[in-house]
Image 1 (cartoon, rainbow, N blue to C red):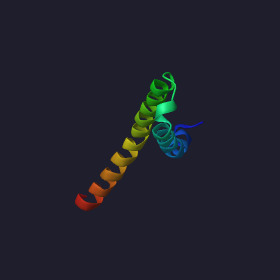
Image 2: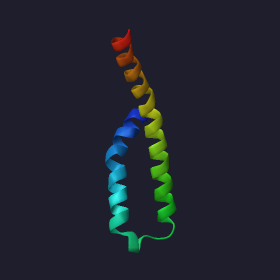
Image 3: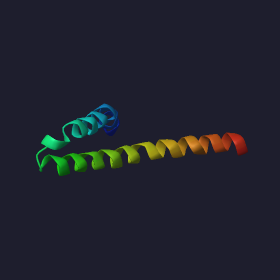
Length: 68
């Protein structure tokens, strides 16, 4: 799976994981909480790393058009 597909899949999966954790907070086993938080942290870092180059390219493009 490419990084792009992983990020897109987690745009759906990560909020479901957060809502599920919130709804079943009292019945979560002790091991599930750190694994879930770790997974969400990795997803957030990978998504940030995937989005930032795209944002930087878009900002440079707009700046070149405005001040070019």
